[in-house]
Length: 261
Ligand SMILES: NC(=O)c1ccc[n+]([C@@H]2O[C@H](COP(=O)([O-])OP(=O)(O)OC[C@H]3O[C@@H](n4cnc5c(N)ncnc54)[C@H](OP(=O)(O)O)[C@@H]3O)[C@@H](O)[C@H]2O)c1
Image 1 (cartoon, rainbow, N blue to C red):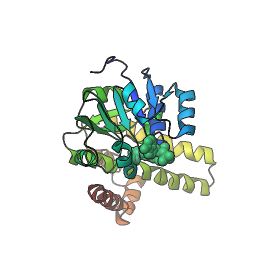
Image 2 (cartoon, rainbow, N blue to C red; image 1 turned 180 degrees about the vertical axis):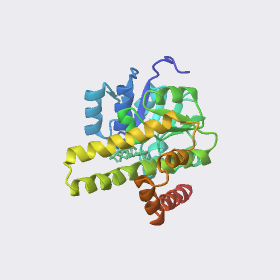
Image 3 (tube, helix red, strand yellow; image 1 turned 120 degrees about the vertical axis):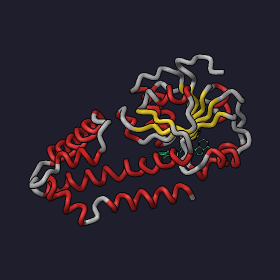
Image 4 (cartoon, rainbow, N blue to C red; image 1 turned 135 degrees about the vertical axis):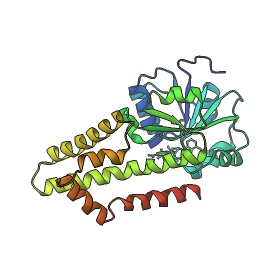
């Protein structure tokens, strides 16, 4: 049983890049609970303890013994090594951020996990308080925790969760896309600072506008804007002709297939 449901004690095994942005996001979002860190990555653990009021545990088992919820954020190939030597209490919740490993695969790797194992893999934009936090299966405690970081979305099946994960990769491609448009503006003479602001605020505006029109299909918003005779329509037609959109579908298909392998 979680003793303090408002602020459950969180323990983290695997204190690297993911853990860093997750903890930053939790603290920025107002999470006041105690956070215990595995000491293995001493430098990152020290930084997080100083910047975000985390405590460094003596070892991995100490993290588990002191925590209500345990987040596993090691790389997939490190999972069996990590879990092999540990024991959990049956009432603990384990969250796995390990991409590409199903719930069943976790239990195949380690038969010592408690029954409540939840997959939760948000992208790094949660550090800015924005972004999807995909969860499977749904769990009230995990959703409460995720709510400090971004927008939790729980899925009914691992298939649906994997679809959301596929678009997490898309989140990474977007920066490259934004960058090419920023570079184009710069080449045409805009300062780096202005180019970056113009592109990023245009995109932020587009998502904010679409989010408030949630009864409308996204393509219909384009149709409303790209009417006959507009420059927007001319550009849109050119992008379609050059497979500008189908290329994204192909990349999503590719990653989705890889996630299922
Ligand atoms: N990076 C992302 O943007 C992102 C996004 C979504 C999900 N994820 C998932 O998050 C997980 C971690 O990715 P990451 O990018 O954060 O990798 P990372 O920076 O390499 O962090 C993994 C950390 O786990 C530590 N570790 C490994 N084995 C351990 C053990 N037995 N006990 C304690 N700590 C151990 C590593 O220490 P050593 O360096 O000493 O090995 C490292 O500090 C992956 O499964 C990935 O799928 C990452």
